[in-house]
Image (cartoon, rainbow, N blue to C red; front, side):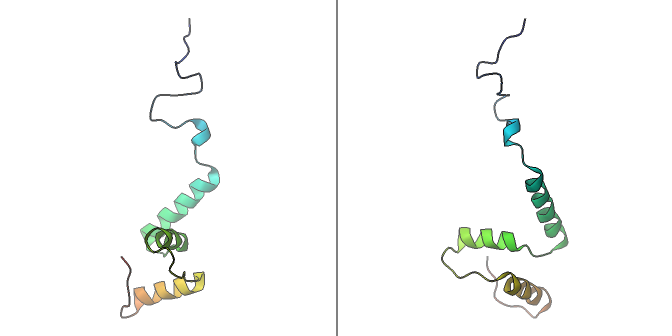
Length: 84
């Protein structure tokens, strides 16, 4: 004899996500690319945008081209302004 879970048949143990909350293939791919960029020290424009939105709202954003040019200068140049 089976008994139903009090919260319903679709719910699992507390604290675990349901299958509908599982990341999509696109989200997994994005996370993998981001992890690889971090490991190899490649600048990540999407992370820059998220950081700026969280820590420096209202400030002008660099274009993708400007961001990568600044990243190369910061890595190989004599130094420059640095945030956080």
